[in-house]
Image (tube, rainbow, N blue to C red; front, side, top):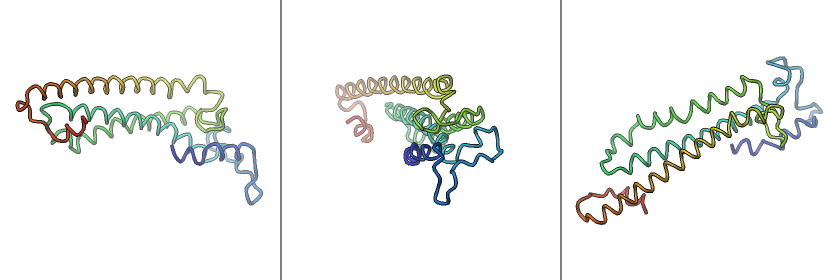
Amino acid sequence: LGCSTICGPLGTIEEEAGIANENGENVINPKLNIGNAYESSLPLTCKLQAAAIQFSIIASLLWTLCFAIHLFRISSVNVNPNRTHSYCSLFIYLLISIPVPMFLTYYIFAQDIVGISSDFWCWINDDYLDEWASKMLYIMVGILVIILFVLYFVMKIHLKKFIKKSNNNNNDLVLNRSRLSFVR
């Protein structure tokens, strides 16, 4: 997303305006015959920016979801670190957080809806923005944010009960140092 921000609006404004580069040539080469006419006129930086925006927003939320699941798993009383801190867990988290954003990124290119939006960002073309933006991003982000909120709220309640129970039973529960430092 940082790359999209750096080479984002300024690059696309220059490209869309047809400003010539140092050699006096326009940045957009309309003679490429790859795909449909509009998509072939998009510069590589625009395509990379659209892919980075689509992938990074969804991937970061899914990775945050995996982090919330992991925190919930390690906050249980009878936790087995060999199960929660294993390569298998990492592989499952990667399997959750990478394929879905990759598929959605591929999908926006397969549907030929990538283009310049009204605010000069390369993501979904302005003609398709109202129809596709809610399908490709807003609904999924909303669902993920609600799930994350519920998970963090449940985890907070779970940990408060755990602390209260451990304070009442001074030596009955053996507290893990990492769990105590997490709670603080």
